[in-house]
Amino acid sequence: MITNTLSQHAIQDSMHHTQAEHIDQYTLWQILGIWALVALPMALLGWVIAPAIIPYSPLQPVITYWLLIIVGMGWEFVVSLAIIYRELGTLRWSAIRQRTWLQTPRDPRTDQPNPRLFWWLLPALSFSALVTFALAGYLDAPMAWLFPALQPAQFMNTSQLASPQFQGQWWLLGITLVSFIFNYFLGEEFLFRGVLLPRMQGVFGKYDWVANSVLFGLYHLHKPWMIPSVLVGSLAITWPAKRFRSNWMAIIVHGVEAFSILGLVLAVILGLTPR
Image (cartoon, rainbow, N blue to C red; front, side, top):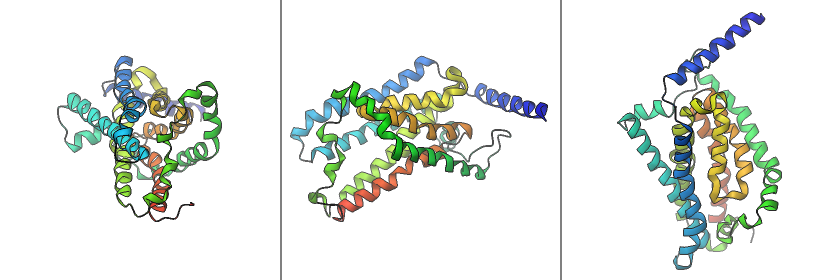
């Protein structure tokens, strides 16, 4: 039985290596270059451009900041498409879908699609919830001690949305939905799990999913106070995506948080928040 188990693991590892060989892998500098191409503009938008234009913007500071962040995530989508087109020479959906693992989860042993593997979302979602609701405060606390100057500026404080002036402002829901599209599908997930993750094994081997989580955490230079909790929480996003070569799993785990945000925005619009 031990021999059979070892043989199965050897076959599985061989399949993973074979899959990686069929996909051109990025070098370390290419990975870091793509990261910088999206992380640095986000930091610039949040820490430089936002405070520069807020005094001249007719919108509330928190809305101006939010719109700039959406612009940054839109830029990630543009970068992703440019990279894919340069690599594949086409932007056909069938090619994009295969390149970015937008497919049914695949059995690591047989490489065959198996929808039942979506059940692996349950432990991933549980871990993500644990980090978000129980551990985030502890994980992020050292950032406040070590870098007190990097705490959120007033215009970054989303609690400003809980204001009577936003009651009945349904355009706020439109901004929220656009933000969701680029946050959970066309922006962050498309670039980090779609473009980068499938091509990081050549540098990081079997720990490419961990390296991807680290890069994703450090990408949040526009929100440095929450980098530790984002880094740890994103392990629940990258592991199932890599294990089952399906970025729908990453999109679902990351996107679940949208329900709580949507609920808060609707409460604000309907005037159900405490005054």
